[in-house]
Length: 307
Image: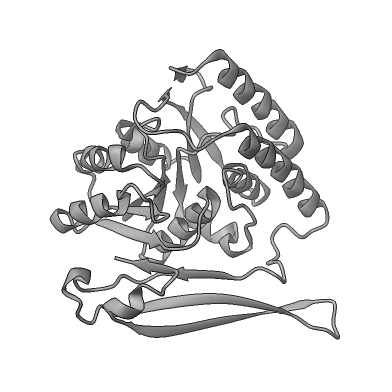
């Protein structure tokens, strides 16, 4: 079974090298790592490139202009699927999601379609976080569970393992989250599609290196997005691509060395272009695929590329 561990990052250079090392030390057969980095100014992508030279199973999806935890997660899921993943593990880079649980997540996937590393199921722990953050997490969890009808104890867990069929079914191209609300949106879509969801206990430890990206503004926006998911589903629009939405993802690796300035090969861009008909209420979607020859000079102009 081919497994991809997908790790969205922004300014995680202090953590990413150690995390990659610990994942590889698990010695899981046919396991690959894809780091989805939003062009971190601290050089996270450089650290990943260094690791990939020694370990070809470590891959980088570098997003030059696009930002956001949600869109990064979507891009990473699509990358893994397009590279033949049978299962995908999603985790954070700050060691709050310890890689030692990956084997247990994969084992539990034999009895479920989606497995969650949970702080709040029996045996789970939430440590090194202040009382205020714990209370906020508790109240937000109640809000999400009641509003979306989820039978999940840890609805804010971003430590998850998916069977391929789940990610194929939830229609990644129609997802509307760009930030942390992607966690709830994925759970909600999987729930609506009828997939089985299982929680296994983990010990969640707050980061010791780097800074958290979560703040109260992002939290409020995330909670409002949950309400939007519910409303869209009531209108039958949650799984329909918005007429104004355009997505672009590079889904094939560039074969060559960027530093040598030679031809880097070809990148396969998949554009989702949606046009609203003036004379009809319905929208039409045009899916265009093409190859672009890339050199060191032209590469700088690309929004997304894979190395």
